[in-house]
Amino acid sequence: MNVVIIGPAHPLRGGLSTYNHRLAQEFQKNNHTVSIYTFSLQYPDFLFPGKTQYSTDPAPSDLNIKVKINSINPFNWLIVGNELKNLKPDLIIIRYWLPLMGPCLGTIARIAKVTSIPK
Image (cartoon, rainbow, N blue to C red; front, side):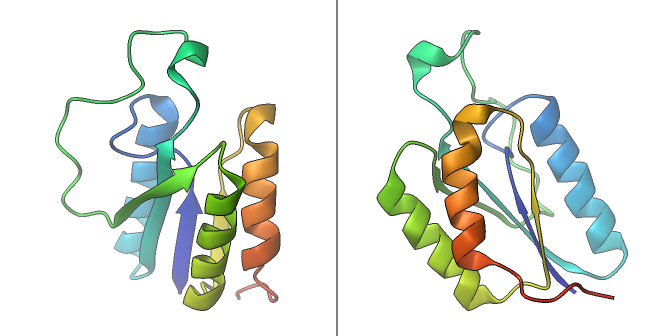
């Protein structure tokens, strides 16, 4: 099965990134192909409550992480949505955690929609 996970991943830090890495690794252990689509810009720096939203750790070498989504650029949402539509994944998992991400992730999902449920 070809799986796409949309959500935080390296170079972003935090629990959601770690969870998405582990979820992808579990799919890979079960012989599924996995790509993680993460954010080139999650949200502007002035909205981030900590020092930095980026990790200084090296990227996991066993994961296919694509840093592509700009959460505040609607033109980018169209590009990513069409890329996923052309990729034709069997399953798209979207990690939604902030209302600010709704328009971005919803637009990508509508464009890239998976039309059947995998067995």
